[in-house]
Amino acid sequence: MNNKCTKFESLFLFRNETELEEHLKECPDCRAEKEKMDKVSELLQEVKPYYAQQRKRSFTRLKVACILCFGMFTGLLIGYFTQYGYNTTSSAYYDTEQTTNDYGMPIDSYGLISLN
Ligand SMILES: [Zn+2]
Image 1 (cartoon, rainbow, N blue to C red):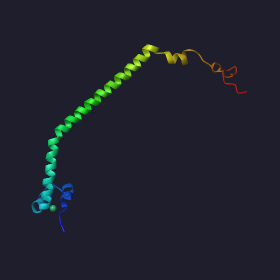
Image 2 (image 1 turned 180 degrees about the vertical axis):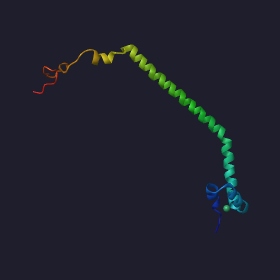
Image 3 (image 1 turned 30 degrees about the vertical axis):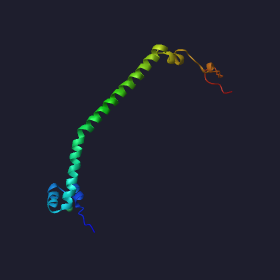
Image 4 (image 1 turned 45 degrees about the vertical axis):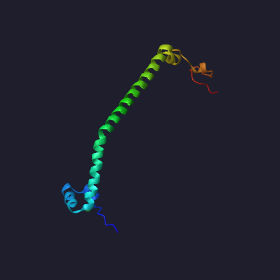
């Protein structure tokens, strides 16, 4: 049966550095574990610049896409208002006075819908 020490993770996470160092001096299992972790850390440090560069590049692409979408939307709005005029929709509803009679409904002398 393998009695491998499992204290490394708990010491690393919940105890201070000196306690971990003292345990590492006397425990070969945890030393091996720490060496493994150091290798991973070195690897991460090595890869970090490339990853940051790629993130920066994709963020730039996102910015360009946002600017293009905003430009297209603004262009469509400007095109719409130059072609149909700014007050087209509002004049249909607000400038010409419309009553319920225009919709073919029976109204009384106050202009309200007559129900009888
Ligand atoms: Zn240990």
